[in-house]
Length: 148
Image (cartoon, rainbow, N blue to C red; front, side, top):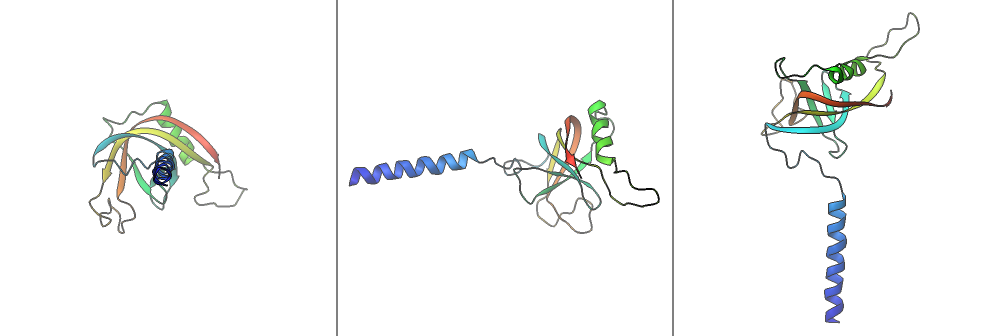
């Protein structure tokens, strides 16, 4: 019986460890304030901002901004991100459409992640909704996820 108990613990530990290691982890959990990171996620329209949604970080949005001109690489990939992000659906003649964006897009970007000390920091917003701000210096890759 004693051997079976040990074997049971070994099997239980193996499956528990395998399940934890097999799950993708949110890169925000181990990130430090002002750390330079390469992140990949969906670039979406927020109420007033661009936001970055990471598939591994459920229910967390990151305010997305561009770096100041000297550090921002405004190359072909950056311009593609801007074009696809701002492109709107064609509407019927005479029909006005607000925020009728055409695409869902994803991007891989290099930049600096700022993390607020608490949920009360707003990064310039009247009401705080996230602890994270990502300042993009280089857009490495852009792809269309689908149409909206």
